[in-house]
Length: 370
Image (cartoon, rainbow, N blue to C red; front, side, top):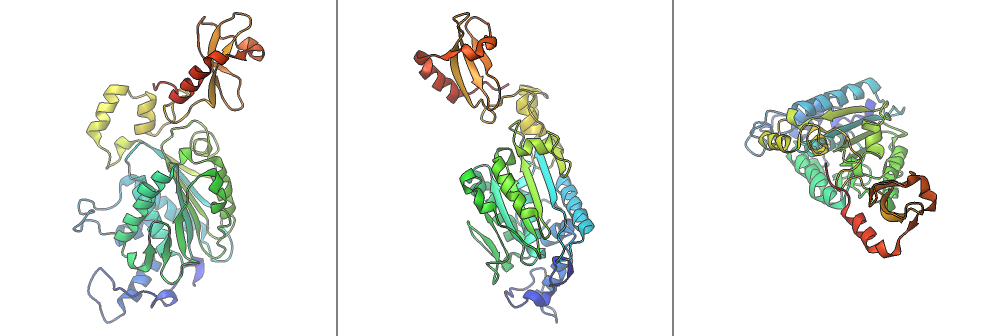
């Protein structure tokens, strides 16, 4: 392996020789030419994506001349970070970290697939883990996008790819990436991904709902080699690692983006115009789902709910109040028959047994959306 974690064509030629798909064979070995071409993109992810995918050619990318503007900006930034660190294959460099908060449908899944194809193709013995907020999201969307984009790439024939792993043919143990559920009980699956002589990377999709423990364990894989960590998501929660990094002041070691879906090529602009008319520019729904901004209120359906809600009776007023219980916070009244909060008597309030069924119903239904 050459400097900066690169490899020469001699390193892997002969593992799989399926021909260079861009044209007929010449006097030189076409597979050797492909390896030489790809090794030249070690510091140029944007060049790799532009040249190694069939843009403007018959097929699903026929209508596109290249990645969207924001994707190009991301890839160009990544290339500059790689170049600045100048990893030599021996001495560890600082992690490359990025977090993207956006509206729906801008192509975050597509960029994930491009990133995996780039990293796995340009770095011998690269190792990565892909996760998402739910197993359904991970398998049906995030990892499915990885499969789609890797199979579109010029280097597709280098890899074995199925629903549980992607690896370089002939190097299954050392050159691979895989999808992993973000269940806190599965956090150890993210541990121990040390890669002293190459790149270790993590990609989190819909990261707003990826548990903090996953982020903590991922930190352990950023200590050596050329580590990278990329977070993508909609800002549906006003707490957690994703919120803290993008909006909460914890992003000083990260490159962060907040992307409005209206500025991107792929979203349905007519539908967004209807949503703007129906909900308004500063509604929480429009802020999160289109503008990629945090909510103004504390609650958004299906995203941020109280730890639990219970009925309490104030011993002073003898009135019942529905109180939201937040982790690490004082009780917050949600409604009250008398209009009085009664929080001054919080220590003397008691839960009503006769209202236990109502309590369970209120916990399930959550709060109205703005």
